[in-house]
Image 1: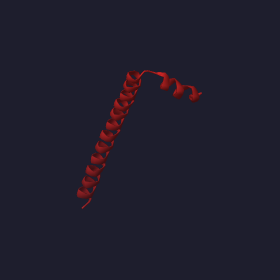
Image 2: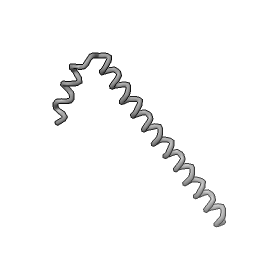
Image 3: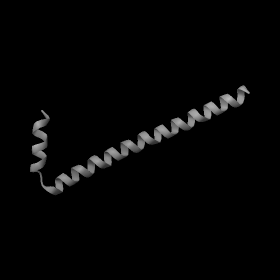
Image 4: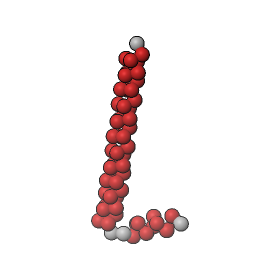
Length: 58
């Protein structure tokens, strides 16, 4: 099914291809940023929880 997609992309004008590429990059970047932000928040919460657990169990 995907074999028809790539040749079709090559027939598109350069501007259209550039816009599609930009859209993919922006969407991918936004997704990666969200994932990274979520991962950092999770790591901070885990570290704080571990620190609190050690602190209160001393």
